[in-house]
Length: 199
Image 1 (cartoon, rainbow, N blue to C red):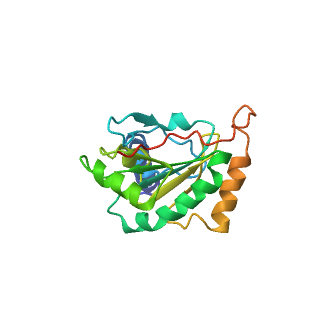
Image 2: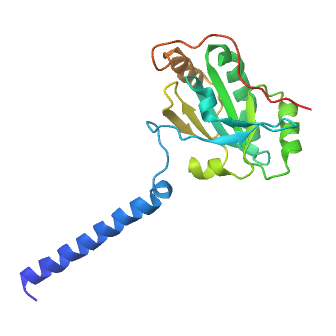
Image 3: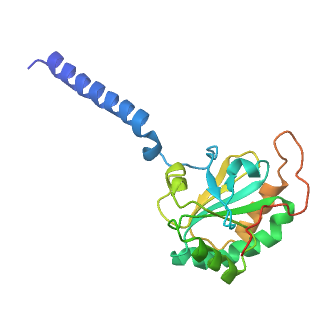
C-alpha cells in the first residue's frame, strides 16, 4: 500500500469518526453534556403538596435567586442537608432567595413528603415531581443535587450535598441577591414565596 493510500485510509477513518460524533451529539446531546454553570436553567414543572396540587414552574420565580434542590425522602444525605437549607432560607428569603426543593418520591408518596416537611419545620417551597421529569431535564446523577440560579436565570453553581449555612455558601447567596434583576430593577423585600400548605 502506498503512502498516499495509507493517508486516504486515515482520512476516511477520521471523517467517519467525526460524522459519528456529530450525529451522536445531535441525537444524544442532552445525555452527553450535563448542565454546567453558565447554562440557562431549563424550565421545569412540579406540583405543590396541597390537597389540591397546583403546578409550579421555574418561571414563577423569575427575577429571584433560586436554589433548586432535587431530593427524596429516602435519601440520607438529603435529610442531612435540609436543616442548613432552612437556615439559609430564613437568612435570605427577604432579600430575594427562593429555595425550591423538588421531591422525586414516587407517586402516592405525598403524605410521606408532607410528614418530612413537618418533621423538619421546612418553610421554603417544597414541590413534588413523581414522574421525575426534573431528573431528565437537569440531567441529574443522583440525589441530592442542587443548582444555584441567578436572577438572570443562569445556573451559577451546581453541587451535591452541602452544609448550606457555611460562610462560603452564605457569601455566594449574599453576592447573588445583591445583583439587580434583569432590567436593573431590584426585587421588593418581603417573603412572598409560595408556601406548601400542610393539611
